[in-house]
Length: 417
Ligand code: ATP
Ligand code: MG
Image (cartoon, rainbow, N blue to C red):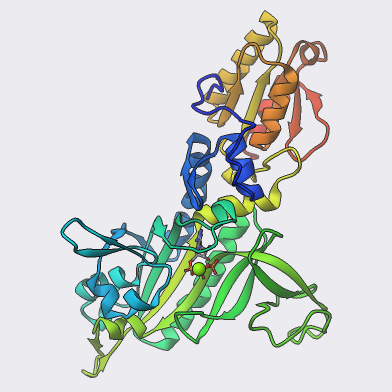
């Protein structure tokens, strides 16, 4: 894509009330637009990142047998009354129509998914099944000061699974945990799986997937040697103690942000909606449900927060809006022609490239924009680079670039045989 055609420009002025680093960077670079505290629109660059995150999540959910659906976000009141959540869930947005009928905005989807499952899963032979969606959620969060990491409107992947026995749930839970670790790895994040009690939903064990960042709202303790990690709230071990799990490492503490969680809902919702099936022996049972969430817009914020530097965003390859940022410097005709040729070659080769072809813009301003936008590889064509025999290639994470021939640069982008 040509930067001269890009809908957004980088900007210096952003809403004065925006205090979080992730949203400041995303606003300046043109990924999001702020509507109000906790509510952001996603612009072309932002959508490219969000779609890549959601596609990785989708691939890994499909790989463990999840089937994608889309559920309504405007909910009838009745199922929320039936589970008691209408009165007990404080973040639930309730709205009234002009006929004074009441509705809820989806903050989670157990109230919708369980009645759907009850209609289609009619025999024990239909179990296990897992369905998921990736969509908008609404929560009346009191503190919405963490930018896109805590939205009042945000996006989440939520999967729900249905099982005949606890053993079958446990089997699937272990598979889902591995899928989650794979997802965060593919997203370029180091996520630790904490053991925590399941909050409002259940007293059973759950895992929260935590990424270390000072902008996080959770405090965790973790072992510096093994994978042991726990929320400070529930941990029976303190900082500085020897890890009870491996007996070798020492426990550290850190701020972290929860990017996902998985938990055992037990029979809470199947009982609430009277969703029962019969065993082969004709005995009635309520299926056991699992719930598996990932905050996809929170991931955008966590990456912006945890992987950025003082110059701007730094996207991992797998979720960057473009793979290459091509900069043409100056108005020399030879430079323009070489840059155009390279742009065509990259596009033909299927490499996603943002081409800074903007006229009347200083080299310094183009470099500053490239750093702010945070595309992994920057390639510069200028009079000087051509004299030196090619283009200057620099990774966003490197301080200095190096001159290589156009051919060598193209080869470096091709998949290794
Ligand atoms: P938190 O403790 O951060 O409020 P939660 O326990 O309420 O999270 P869940 O209801 O389990 O979260 O939602 C699943 C995932 O959705 C979370 O792990 C998080 O990544 C994301 N998430 C939750 N609330 C928000 C929010 N307000 N804005 C953005 N993402 C959110
Ligand atoms: Mg919450």
